[in-house]
Length: 199
Image (cartoon, rainbow, N blue to C red; front, side, top):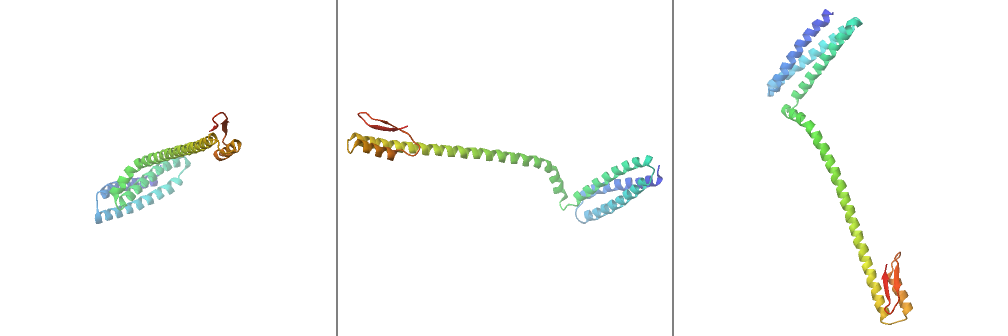
């Protein structure tokens, strides 16, 4: 065992306990007293860092058989000191109570943001589907209106043919050329009443 390492270890444990007490006391203070306490804590942290560096040097100079145990202890002390530094940083924040509140709410906010993003995505998909349905309905109405207009023209020319004015074949060709749109088929039924219907 290294008596030098154990001496540094004892000093570090006392310093760490003192730092924890001071952090607790500082979180309840305000104003000038808090600044003074934070200054004391910062000095204590620097002292603790110095002790850890000394322990590290001492542990690395030992025989390999005992070195591993001392380095494991040293890792625990470094972790402990990092916790003290985090606490000091939190207490040093301009509004420590607000910082604590934000830390507590932070986990819940991450979930809320994820849910909000998911809801926004679903809403956008639903809106897009609704817009597509509206476009299909408008296109269907246009198609129906075109068919109705074409049927009215066919009926008009059919009535014109029934009245016997003009040459029947010539008038029939005019009716077909006016009433049929490109790509549409017509069925012409010639009987006593000449009727031209769109298919």
